[in-house]
Image (cartoon, rainbow, N blue to C red; front, side, top):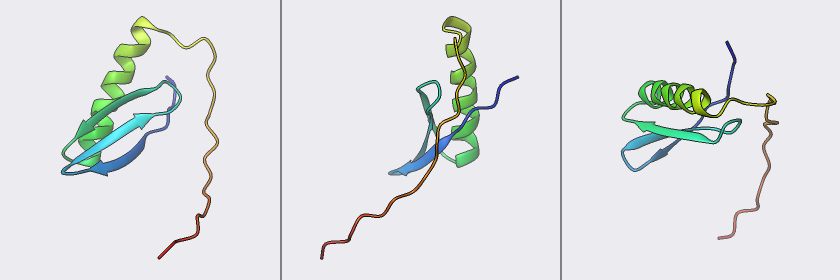
Length: 68
């Protein structure tokens, strides 16, 4: 079993979940459904295209000045 990252954001009335390690994405009406759909999409993707090398993304934050 492998552990992957889910990055979730809201677009209109749906949540979009993306996996940066694999490049898969999915959506759902709740965060939980979006992540569950992403898990399924990632599993299906990896059946066809197994990862040659696993890596963990570096997650950080940065600031941008607000312009009024």
